[in-house]
Length: 234
Image 1 (cartoon, rainbow, N blue to C red):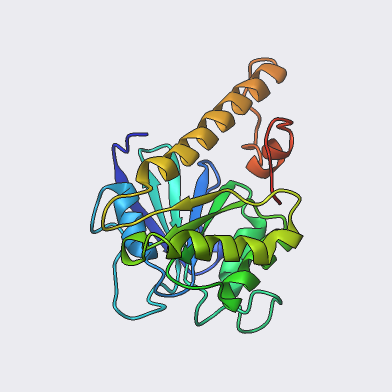
Image 2: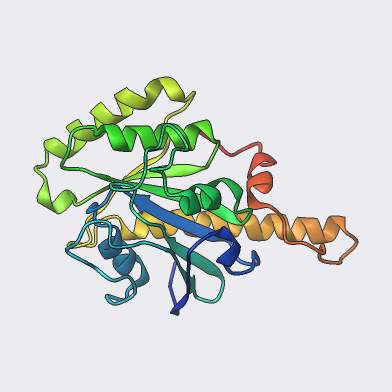
């Protein structure tokens, strides 16, 4: 996938303030200081796209960027200081919760995990929340350049073992490093695959509608459910 442009769309304080639902969206979220902003800049090919801050929990709003005029990259606030993921409690970022559960054009969530850490309760809680709410996601283990070659697979294996009971099939796993560029082609490939499938389904919907586009854009989550060949861990 080649990204021809990356344009800041808006910072939305809640779901109602998000842009229209005309473009597929891919959301990135992780505990504070997981390296999310650096990863987003790597994917976009623009170092200034997402602001990298030394202060954990810097992102406070739903930041949305339009990529190549065809899809949106969504930078969600980290849950390290605001999310108690097992319950929709006051500590949970309600704007993020509403976005993840009710945004019809949300295609996929990239749940970021620090590859240098053994399984953390807050990450496990959040993944359990995603699974319980049937939100499609993949796992992305970050900062692999800062971890020994043996530690990364060991931490990934330990994490998958902790969550194995929640799934018939484990979620897809990726590794990345914003410093070395590792993982960029694979993550963009996931997005490209999703966009290709959505486009094919949209064209089929037009054909089924007599050559006329439906009045409302399709709910991409419902489209995903209609794909019998799609292995879903959720």
